[in-house]
Image (cartoon, rainbow, N blue to C red; front, top):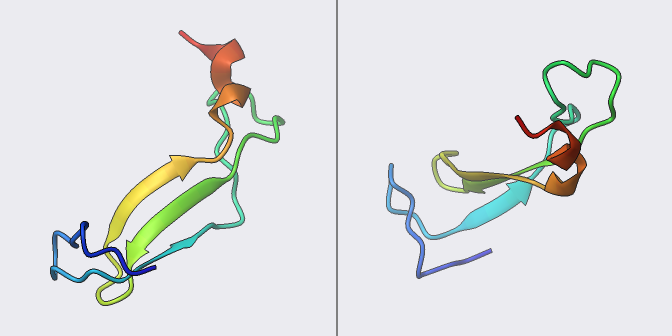
Amino acid sequence: MNTPDKKCAQCEGTSFAQGSDYINIRPLDKKYTIGSEKIYTFCLDCGEVLSIKISNPSKFKAWVF
């Protein structure tokens, strides 16, 4: 994804991609909960992570502290 309105803080690149890893985020005290996927937006030039987003934050509303 080419986004001229956003620039990488490290290299000023404007080409970004999104990806995920195989480990979902889950509440600290709920080891056996499935949780939700993390979506990373990162610079294609240097690898700097622009953002990390939780794909389904509503799964955490029961654990608000």
